[in-house]
Length: 104
Image (cartoon, rainbow, N blue to C red; front, side):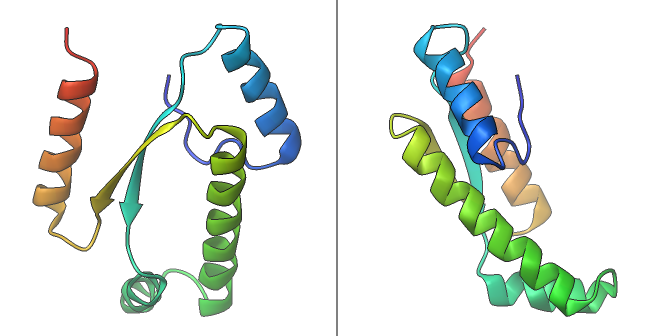
């Protein structure tokens, strides 16, 4: 199961934590792309996709949600990937992590 941007509220975190506690979901495995906020802002400005204030708010939300996640799931396996590398290198690293974690 892949959850992107979830849990984003305390209620979501409570619900997932309960499922993990009951054994209905495994301990979370998270791949976190590490990209400095300044780099995200620069990239989105170049793409002219969203107003800076919108991106800044999404970054604040992201950091808040990751902090919440770490509190609710201290046993989670969180693996960081350098998101400033090329797309191909990031893809290769993520694929390698997934193959190691979920060997057939």
